[in-house]
Amino acid sequence: MSNSVSLDPQLLNEGWLPREIFWSEEIYQLELERIFARAWVFLAHDSQLPKAGSFLTTRIGEDEVIVVRGRDGKVSAFLNSCPHRGNRVCSAEVGVARGFVCNYHGWSFGLDGSLRGMHESDSYDREPTFDRSRLGLKKVAQIESYKGLLFATFDADAPSLPEFLGDFTYYLDVMLDNDPGGTEFFGGCISSILGCNWKIAAENFAGDALHAGWTHASGAEAMLGGPVAPLGDPANESYHVNVNGHCWEFNLDGVGNAATLGDKGIVRYLRENERNFAQRLGETRAKMVGSVASANVFPNFSFLPGQNTFRTWQPLGPHKTELRTWVLVNRNAPEEVKQAWKKGAMLTFSPSGVFEMDDGENWEGSTHSNRGFVTRQQPLHYGLGLESRVAHPELPGNVHRGQINDANQRAFYRQWSKMMTSTDWSELLDPRAAR
Ligand code: FES
Ligand code: FE
Image (cartoon, rainbow, N blue to C red; front, top):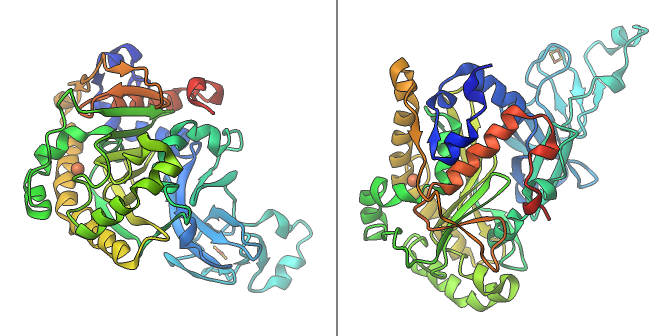
């Protein structure tokens, strides 16, 4: 194992990160084992599986999975790989099915993943050791939903989803619970491939407000009619917060600020509902609804609260990532507001969106420069806000003052390092941050 797998905590606390973690195949393989095969990973929104038999296919790390709603209404998830010769069982991305049949030799599986039958079944039945009950599609160890978001883990020993999320649910509720009708994914999923390491994208959403005013300057002029407002004024009430490696950076300027895609309908909807948000969430969190912000649920599930884009960074090797994006809206929002959010997301954060293009080019550059041996030996700077930690009377988790800060990125890599080096869950979650 490379030494770079365990990040030197002292160096990280001082704001330095080795580049090897963005390049090494060895480290990447260990990430699949220690992070993606153990952490709770986002699978789907409940609204994507509206009825019995509704299914979609996705990945946890590089493990392909089928997520399906059974006849009892419960959602289960299992490997999309046949236990006979390993073929992919379901090739569709989404649909409604009564079961799944493998193309190769006709083994068929129920909505619960159990083996039901096969071509030439008599030949199997004559085999004394053949046991259908042991040959279903391998299920995830645990699957759970938090207010419409479905997560799963392959690790039976992993703590429950509420423990894994800890006090981060306080922040998640800003998006998921600001309205009694709950939320839905509106429209379909857009997928694209980026030539970057998945962590570079995840850490950007975890806390990189710094890049917005520079990387996205021209895009903001074109899309929003003006520059991104400077975010570094110490007088701003803005924060980096993190819990168990889950990160959110935001300001408390109030609803309807610059993140609303410049759409008057969205701004009106937010303003009209300001009192309702405050009643459900309290005054402080109500100011976060629709606000300039970005977040990442460890390891690879990100969103922008103002733009309502939700996305996963699914690894396909150390230098390749599949980006899948959806638009989340309040289920009870007027149709034209939902449409405006979808259109806004398409124009900004989609493969054809102006901001996505800006980011992707930078992340690919940040990944591929590390192919140079000497370049790879040079540490990267993550040293903004080393002394920014504050105690806040209301905000839970680790709170750091200032949106222009690297505190969340350091927290993301601290969690990454803990999971890469320890197999003991009692060492992996912050007890202060657990509910
Ligand atoms: Fe699936 Fe043979 S590989 S039936
Ligand atoms: Fe960006």
